[in-house]
Length: 138
Image (tube, rainbow, N blue to C red; front, side, top):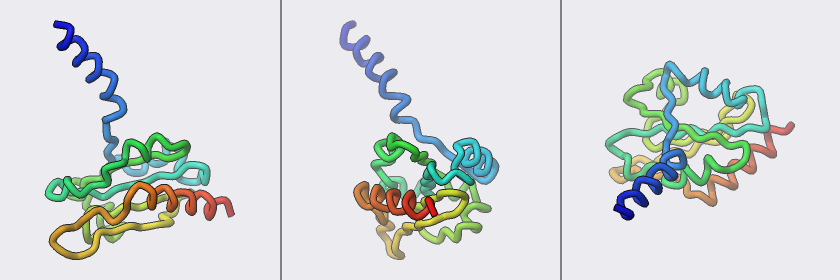
C-alpha cells in the first residue's frame, strides 16, 4: 500500500513538470501573444515543429529549457498545423524556431536524410537563446 501511495504522489508531483504545451494553426497567435512574446523582447518563445513519425528525435531537454527565466517552449505537430508549416517553411522535422519581439531570429532544422536527428542540443540552444536576448535588446 505504501508503495502505491508513494507512486501516486510521485506521479502527481511530476505531472506539471512533464506536461508539454502544444500549439497549432488555431492557437498559435493566442498562445504566443498571451505569453507576452511578440512585442516583448524580454521573453523568448521557442517552437519545435514536430511529427509523430519522428518523435524519438525530438528535442529532449525541452523541460529544462522551459524552466529558464523568460523562456516559453511549445511543440507544434506539423500534421495538425499546415498553415504554420507553410508560413515558416518547415521541410524537415524537427525544426526549431526561436522568437523574440515577433520575429523568428534563429532556425535550427534537421538535415535531409533518413535519420532526421534533432539539429541542436541543450547547450547550443541555451547559447542561441542568450544571443537572441542580446540581439533583441536593440
